Image (cartoon, rainbow, N blue to C red; front, side):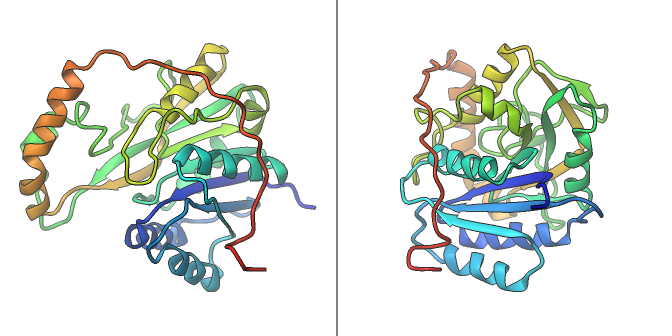
Length: 274
């Protein structure tokens, strides 16, 4: 069997329209010659048109999709399910992204080549905002991008590759498979569960990697984009964002709790599918 160089894990729940945009964007990403990769899509018990979107993408045969269904609700269950599958196929590196992002044309190539340096164990790519051409980035966002990252994600440390001491963000990160062989997987006590918005599973895992003394690099050339808001959207959401900023600025550090190792296993494409 040809070794798998890179597995990209994309977990999704009830965001069929956004997932469709993300998959069409991935189809436009250049797939470098010599790269053997797979896209692992984990449907975390969606009840909308997610399955139809995935099947359509599989039928287009542009992306090397390995799709599966995780009925146990919770993003960390889906993440760990995808990681277990990536381990089973012996992927050399495992990348992670979200169902509401789009991607630069060289995203795959930059992630892959970022691991050319053998001492690099993890990667933090850049996440930048993509605003509609009809909407100018509002000053309230431009002046508060770091404080608003939990509601309008942005992870941009500049244009220079560098070793970092802060953990990667889940929408654009990657680790060598050996990291997951040595460290317990994502913490089930953190992360979204269905429509309940919780954060921190990516940060907590990255902090454990850094605590082991392993090297994580920020790679600005591996760029993903998070959508900004439409004109009506940013006017409507501004009051909620102001409240959220106050919460972020006033909150103390969040407690970290360990979790038992995920038992693993894989599942069929969808219940009843062959």
